[in-house]
Every structure is written in C-alpha cells, then in structure tokens.
Length: 118
Image 1: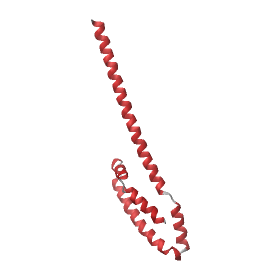
Image 2: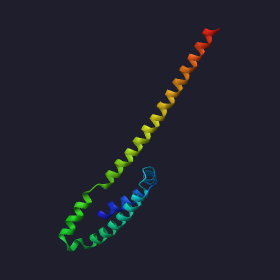
Image 3: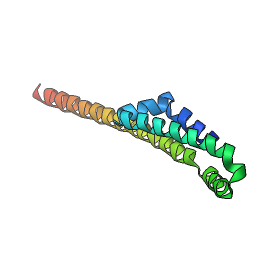
Image 4: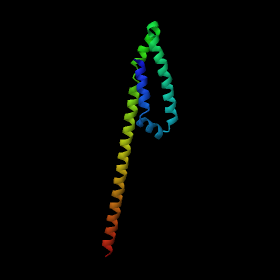
C-alpha cells in the first residue's frame, strides 16, 4: 500500500515534464539523487510491508506513511510550472504589443512631421 505511493513518485519524476523542469531550473542532478533515494525507500517499504504482520510499530508507521500525499506536492509543482509558462507567454505578448504601439507612434510622428514640411 505505501510502496504504491513511492512507485507513483518514481514514475512521475521520470516523466518528460519533470525532466524539463529539472533541466530548466538546474536541478537535474538533484532530481536524479531524489529518484535514487526513492528507489531505496521503495525497497525498504517492500521489506516493511512483508514484515508488518509481526510488528505493531511497523504497521503503525506504514499506516501513517500511507496517509502522506507526496503526490499533492508534485501536482502543485506542475501547476506552478504551467502558471509560469502562461505568465511568460503573457509577458511576451505584452512586450510585442508595446513594440507595435511604439512603432505605430513612431510612424505617426514621422508621417505628421513629413506632412507639415510639405
């Protein structure tokens, strides 16, 4: 039960979205280390799942662990990445509009200047 959470995290961190995030944010090495750590945690969890029948403490720990929602944190990260992409696109669009307006104003000034000279 708990290991499925870790399996999900390992799979999610291997997706192209997270590979792109890690590359853009310069955390590619950290992501690789996290994947390796999660792989080790997964192995421990698999062992713990097998032994929980003999240990109340282990069973309690696994129940608490399965209540954690690490995937929620990763989902929030995905939302943040998309939000930043949208803001970047809006920023690019606003910059282009300002450039067009500046060019239009420059043309109008040039046109007004040439028509008053004639």
